[in-house]
Amino acid sequence: MQEKVEVQPILSMNSVEVLYDNVMMAIKGVSVQVPKGEMIALLGSNGAGKSTTLKAISGLLKAERGRVSRGEIKFEGTDITGMLAQNRVEMGICHVIEGRRVFEHLTPDENLTAAAPKGMSRSVLNAEKEKIYNYFPRLAERRNSLAGYLSGGEQQMLAIGRALVTQPSLLMLDEPSLGLAPFLVAEIFGILQKINQEEGMSVLLVEQNALAALEIVSEGYLIENGRVVMNGTAEALKSNSDIQEFYLGGGEGTDFHNVKHYSRRKRWLS
Amino acid sequence: MDLVFLAELAINGALTGLLYSLFAIGLVLIYKASSVPNLAQGGLTMVGAYVVVALASDVGLPLWLAIPLGAVFMFALGFGIERVALRRLAGRPVVMILMLTLGLDIFLRGVTLAIWGGTSRSMDLGVSYEPLFLGDIFISRIHLVGAGVAIGLFVAFMIFFRSRSGIKLRAIADDYMASWSVGISVERGVGLSWALASVVAVAAGVIWGEIQGVDQALSLLLLKGLTVAVLGGLDSILGAVVAGIILGIIENVGSDFLDPLVGGGSRELIVAAVLILTVMIRPHGLFGRHDIERV
Ligand SMILES: Nc1ncnc2c1ncn2[C@@H]1O[C@H](COP(=O)(O)OP(=O)(O)OP(=O)(O)O)[C@@H](O)[C@H]1O
Ligand SMILES: [Mg+2]
Image (tube, rainbow over all chains, first blue to last red; front, side, top):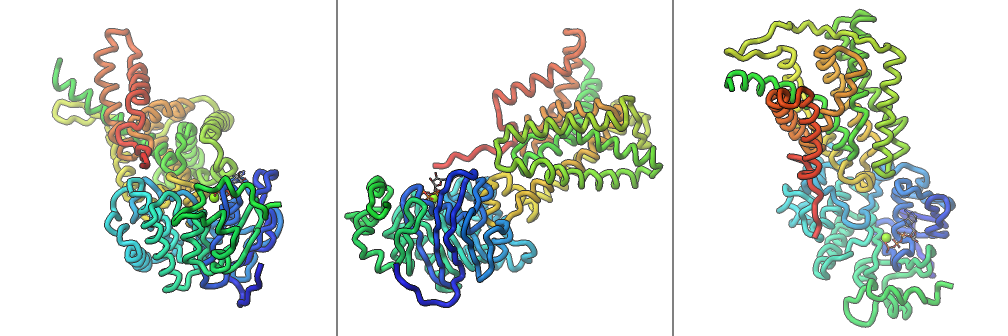
């Protein structure tokens, strides 16, 4: 692991353990820092504990009978470990959950309205919507049809747009590339990068598609079996031989849904 | 058959049906936010009626004050039910929540029986019993008033569900987890839907209390209300209104034909047939939302 030189990170998670149903330990002492304004990736194979890590940060664990049993999570210097999810959203943390969970029976426009924070005036909301439609012009075209009938890519864009309405300073995304064609992944990641640069929004990106993720982030963490097993700059990770072997695969565009079974016998596990 | 008589049956059937709609709107409100048919809506309707009667007869308040106060009380009760009972069950299987609402219905019936006893009390709205004549057709005034209330609530809720709070409630009905993820307070939303349904229960309780007296039988309105809600599509307010009218007409006209043949009791048979056939043939009802098939 390498040292980082930085001011106070926007998010710092220290030795966090999560228990589901009081018995199942899904992450075992994970520490992750997100420096302000940076894009950070969290990589790892199925069941590694990536989603659990995000849920611990966003407070969504509670809905799945999980809890942080050790460690602490600080956002902008404040301890948020036991806070309600809705208070964390108000503070500026928004979590785009796994699986493009848009509100299917609402239109894209209503999806955006639903996420409006308490007290946001109509004019501010409309300005937010216009900004989001500018980032995602495909959504603008379909703003009044049912969200359930949008294509997978459009739904992912809507899920991201819906999160942006909450005006987050830390946006967390759980596998936004899952099941999308490579050109769509490139389009969505490009937009994320643009928002990050234009608005200084920090991003924590969970991905199995390491190849695409390492192209846009500055730094990455690798999680296996509930532990961080590697952490470094995107360049360092891309040139690491283990990562190359197990995560970047041989061929172009291979993501490791196809090669995940290899990761079961990785040597850094023991 | 006499056409005027048929028209009279149909019109009065439609008006009675709208009174079923009045009840069913409460069911739909809760279904829209939590995807659970509220089996306690009958109990709530009865409690709403008792509270208004208590405020009017026992405390001696005028009705124009007793009804809004009853509505405020029931609004708070609705929120309270979410806070005390439902919150613990969030995220559990729907069957558990359904059983909880059944338990709540039994509880509300027990409480009203303990406090007010079994004898029927009367709700005196002061609406004249003189029938109204529309040409040769005879119409009940109280049914007309109740139908007007049902339509008024329908319009109010159509507007509400397009407002920001209404959209948030619909979002909650779609996906709890996604709602939490963008900071929507699911608990407060579900509480609000119960509170609104409890206010609707006051309206239904007052009208039905005037028609059939305030007693335990009010809670049995659940059966027809549920049939209307299912036929309309459980999550559609428009569906509840249209289905109420349809069921009311079928019931009134149909029973007039069938009663002489089967010797009475055909109303219940017609309601049962509508409920069973709807579930078998068109489970989403007339206007219910379909589960969207994702490709
Ligand atoms: N709600 C839950 N209850 C019990 N165990 C859970 C729950 N959610 C996740 N787990 C377990 O916790 C571990 C980590 O799961 P998590 O979903 O965080 O993995 P992940 O890295 O996101 O995997 P994937 O790439 O498949 O999404 C797994 O062993 C999983 O079975
Ligand atoms: Mg996951």
